Length: 414
Image (cartoon, rainbow, N blue to C red; front, side, top):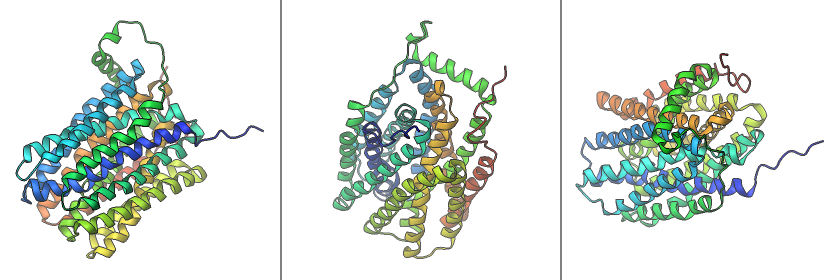
């Protein structure tokens, strides 16, 4: 009787530390401190501040949407996704540190630095995610992917410490974010080895952009034959839109609609990170028992219930409780999506298709904030805006039901 391969290895743990590292940026800049600081201080809390913020998100995500599939294809060709990840990580670290110098009225610089930092953060994720197939066996994808998110939420909790310490001067928390990202990403770059494959000696190797565009064009041409992958990506496009919109606007919603203070926001995010960490572990093991797809469907139902309930919540305690529930589904839905994508992706196109995975996530994030902002503007009420996000969870769920998993991964025409 063969012994089941060990899933928690030193390599897997070092890989997961990168999730710990980048979580400082996700919490301090994207979800919490810089989002509130930009609106209240940089843009003087003017009504147009939400438009500036959503526009910054959209521009950065659009840039990543264009870059991800092309660079992913080139990284597959050259077997150098680690190099791309290092470049984008450094871009995020440097621009985040420079946010220290952004003060009242410096809207343009505030927007520019956020755009470049978010490009660095988001573009790097596709290359990081693609390493799952190199460090784990297929039967361990759920647990490894879930571990990464769980460790990431530990990092999110750690990031709240400088937020609390520097609440009177939030600019110092941006420097702290850069430092945490730098220190805890170093083990990945020092110790994780990338599997190399021989270059195709066709002359294409001298033009990375042409290689990437050529391979992406070919993939798009044949994508109709990857039936499950195509359906899953469309589903993911919709439901992750809802998840990301909640991430981008949760702090602004809590502060604007419910009047949360910075200290209360720290407590709220601590609750979310703790339950997200628990959810990442718990749902990873549940998925091994009842199936990844079915578990992911349960998460989407949970998100739908949350968006409806938030519409009726009027007090901070109720919002903290629903935040705890959202945390359970936050880490699990992201981790299980990455696991699903790993199963459905052909080995020889893993980085390229993870580029498309990033493409769908980033383009969906353009639609979500726009919908939230438009509904909020038309109704003058953020409650209707959060309710409108339920559309993405409903349609994403219906498409996910059509995915055949794990069989019939690829159906190619002869």
